[in-house]
Amino acid sequence: MPAGYIIANVSVTDPAQYEEYKKWSTEAFRVHNAEICVRGGKVEVMEGDWAPERVVVAKFPSFEAAKAFYDSAEYLRARKAREGAAIMRLVVVEGL
Image (spheres, rainbow, N blue to C red):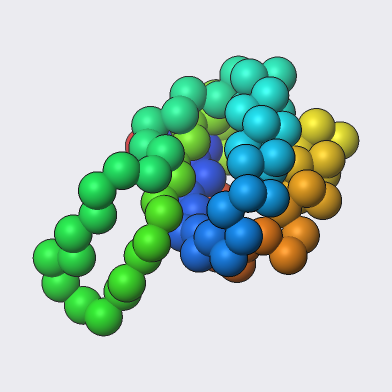
């Protein structure tokens, strides 16, 4: 079964409040057996006009598992903690 990936580009607007989101999202990733491939770090645009700020890539056992994570009670808690602290652009992608 192909893996599922959540890919996010985050613009943090309130760093102090965002720390609360990170705490709860880390726990949600753990509960849902996600492998964090990328979480922050240096970004350099090689082509195009995309200007990501904070990139996160998480791997899940399947596309459906990644979608279930997003809708889970654990991640909902993290999303509520993030309200007003960041602008999130997030997609789920089926892997190979």
